[in-house]
Image 1: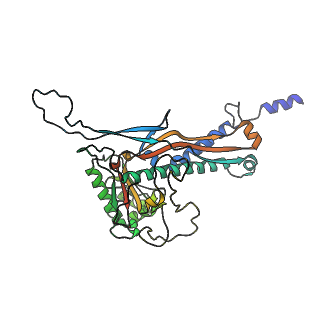
Image 2: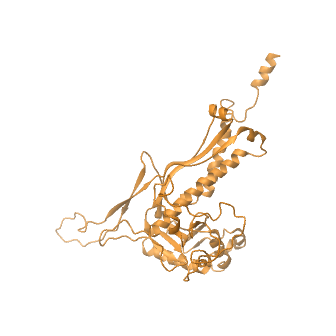
Length: 378
């Protein structure tokens, strides 16, 4: 009888083990990791639209600017030892890594046993969403700062172009930000400014809030902004705008928008577009921008204060406009062993360490509305 029991025990199939050996949960944890990364990648759009570098063995990363130089006529007999004006001028920009960014949850083992759905998978996606949201928000704030900045190259007669701010509309009403005609005009103005400042056509993108994006679809569908081959489905799905003036358009709820993220409800004014609150928006829609390094522990770069985005309503940029350094890319960690036994559950942790700042101000364009005065640099 004892022999029978032993045979039954060794024949058990443990689907969580790798090659029927070792930790019975090993493969489950890898499945969780995949869910977290998928949640991050599907929601972070800024990461692939700017210059991203990996930071190793240091707290910051240096980026070098090289300015323009000039052509000179050679005088016969003179040695050629470089331009007489010492061009091209060079400057640097340093981006520091912010502190470790984390999102975590404790999963009680009994809850997993009693739950009728995959608890870890659901939590993993939400952790990925949280990290992606923060990632995008910091990069978009850095781009806005770049649009208000002068170039680091300041050598006399060799000053490089700085950032650009384009007014959407011509009134003192923030509602201009939702006018499709105003937006299209602003795009063409921005494209011309980028051309004039010598910014490459490659990698130009714009990020608007959802209502701005849908306003373009509704009002400008007959003017070439919608791909005619997919116009019917595009109008319904909200994914039909290819580009304006060579600028590919994305929509996001993470751009600075009149001192909040993505949207703003309330009575119309110079700093409020006057959109009626649809109700039941919860705690995560129309969030106010948090203040910057002076008020938030862990921020080591300048991302601006809430009030400094009072009239911001969109971004247009080329990938050289901002840089992002990653000391720790998106990762997942899960407790196990004795810790899991003691607490009868696991802590699931998503983490990353990154920092962002503008690089080439000439490649950054801020859209603003509700005022004739360009928002001040910070």
